[in-house]
Length: 165
Image 1 (cartoon, rainbow, N blue to C red):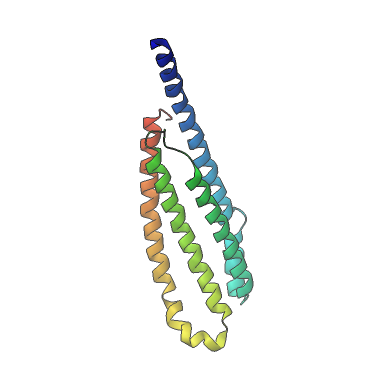
Image 2: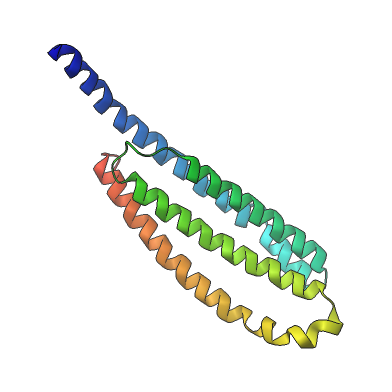
């Protein structure tokens, strides 16, 4: 009976580094996916160009697509099972919060396109809302920066706890 318990314990312990490595690889692929969503396919450049060229419908659809893809990434991270991995819960939560901040930024982009889409007749009414976008963006960028730092600290603790460095 002692031997069975010892073997079971060894198998359980030997699975942890593998699970940690898989989670680490998953987070790396998630980072690449988010980079592609936001930067890689020039979607943000196209969205900004659409706003400049008074094509709010196009800017709205690009922003909405990016937001939907970011939501999908967040759902993938939320579904990740990290219960048996040291320091992984904190890293998972920090990652979710970071990507939620990026999603919040995309939602401001969508709102901006919707307001522009509302037409020039309503522009005077929405002018004060539009003037608040830089302030909102600055605040969201500050939050994202804090969450980025928290995610990196959690990742360092995770990698150190699971001997992944």
